[in-house]
Length: 379
Ligand SMILES: *Cc1c(COP(=O)(O)O)cnc(C)c1O
Image (tube, rainbow, N blue to C red; front, top):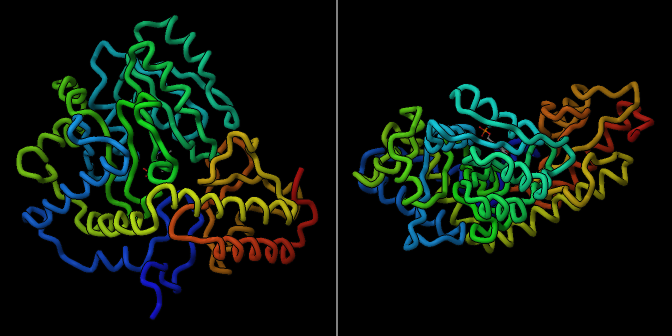
């Protein structure tokens, strides 16, 4: 009998930053019509919330909550920013990629005062510089960091940035969309107050909701500051408090899939085992692509095992569209766009994929190189 936790063999394999290839059993979990306001579904939602708190190494007893919110990851980040910053607050965004810039855009839309500490896409923010900026500007109330900036795959050092934020008594918000569940995160060490992630990244569920981990008391203290109704994070928590329900139509199928995805994460051995599989995927990818002659974009010291950027081959025969289409014809979907400022393409190592998948992707890249008659692959 085929292993139900493997992806169905008919779909092309996704090497993207999400949504990702999921197991057949995660997809099968959606073959039900759950009563969105029925107690059985509400109990499942509560169980998912409890398991997320535990997965983060946090204690519900100490007041930590996992708040689920309809929409993709962006909605979760925007919910935090639209809900917790008081009128007199000011947000410092640490930006070195498209997701940091997206947080800036949100603050612009909300007319929330903010400042940006930008570094280049291959450079993490410097804790000493952060320290200087916080010391210099006491009006900064909140700091936003992107853990794995999926634009390039750079891993920003929240374990050294967070303690600086805490020492200055500011609120630390971490977008851990593409790392939570596969990169170990110590909330206490990093001084995280709000962490955002979503259903369809390293937990290997399907799209439909994001979730925020935070302390109930912190969020309750923000009463009255929300600038949005549907993205009101405290409002959402109060809805769950009241009757166990989402305030508005919940992503029922996505929750069913997520429940199964959490079970499979536990079966695999938890985040440490998942990290190991992703690390092997990344190592296999990097070794294979390097052997072919490609050059990765980031310095190894800051490269995550989540997603890897490769520099466009300088060969005049190379066009990304043709390259992408050839890989797709061979059954492999890489990320189709370019969001980095550098001329790079990205290949993800996350989702229900294994070393054997990555090896066949590398083989397909080798074939595409031959077919396109590319001679120069690295600058
Ligand atoms: C995926 C991702 C998001 C959210 O993107 P959506 O398309 O809204 O799910 C936000 N931040 C990071 C770092 C991400 O990788």
